[in-house]
Length: 334
Ligand SMILES: Cc1cc2nc3c(=O)[nH]c(=O)nc-3n(C[C@H](O)[C@H](O)[C@H](O)COP(=O)(O)O)c2cc1C
Image 1 (cartoon, rainbow, N blue to C red):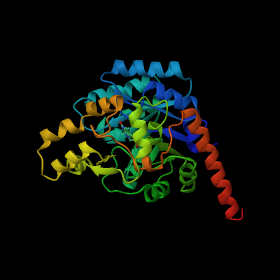
Image 2 (image 1 turned 180 degrees about the vertical axis):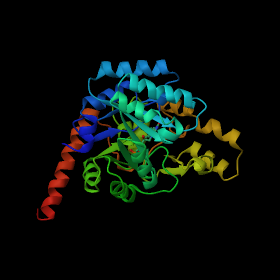
Image 3 (image 1 turned 90 degrees about the vertical axis):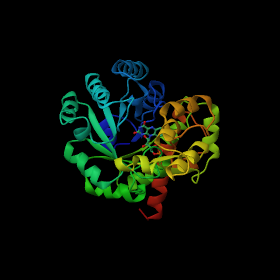
Image 4 (image 1 turned 135 degrees about the vertical axis):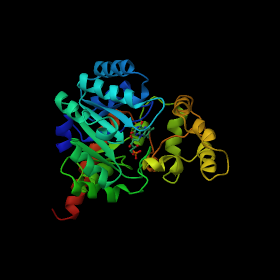
């Protein structure tokens, strides 16, 4: 397969793993890259520049293929702007293939010098966006590609609630740089649809969470198979709305408590913070009680019925996409 994304990233298949706090580790990133797609190493897993350096080194020991480093540019006490700037500089020093920015744009949040720094180092920079306006800004700021992420996505969708079906073709029409489709992508049908809507590839995270190489407790994998597309909710609009964001997470006991607090029925910000802490999610991924933390999971969970290895998943997606496109061509009399 050849698209502008396979060319830009130097990968075999136009499939990227999205950032996943605690879960997009060197091991998972390398497994995905070794399978011909783009693995993701999420910098938020680390508390210092040296930790990220070691993680990049570990990933390059496990794969000689390209991988992308996610830097989530949101206000954070654990990950202050200075540390995020360090992360970006380290990616340039280490000459990783690409950086995935999610949140505020690099030029306004980290500084004007950062995109030129990446260009000088030969590192590609991609921005995940939830609106057309942000895609246009990314192109103007010098980014190499954008990911159009519809509000089906797990994690932090834009508060405007635009679905992938609408956002993706609008972004494709608005910018000239390559575009990845995200939010609800799981299989070959998704890839074929993304390409049909004008994308150069797709990005998935919930689907990669449901693979053997993603090191979560077996109960979490069981939960992903059992849950349906109706089992996620949008929350934290009061807390994150000011940043233009919200969270999509699994409907569970903790989300119920979060919703009560947001509706003014159960405490204040001080009561909310421990419920949404990243540390709480880390424990749950490891220990497996899916009711006990805010778990960022997309609507795509409704289309997940198994836990394949990454090596089974990637060729399966590509083969299915080819079949879907051939069948569609026949239907169209081509
Ligand atoms: C478990 C999990 C953790 C995530 N953590 C992050 C993160 O740290 N940074 C980020 O930018 N996005 C994060 N996301 C969002 C994904 O990178 C991606 O945008 C989204 O999941 C794509 O939609 P999908 O869930 O339908 O595949 C996370 C998603 C999941 C499922």
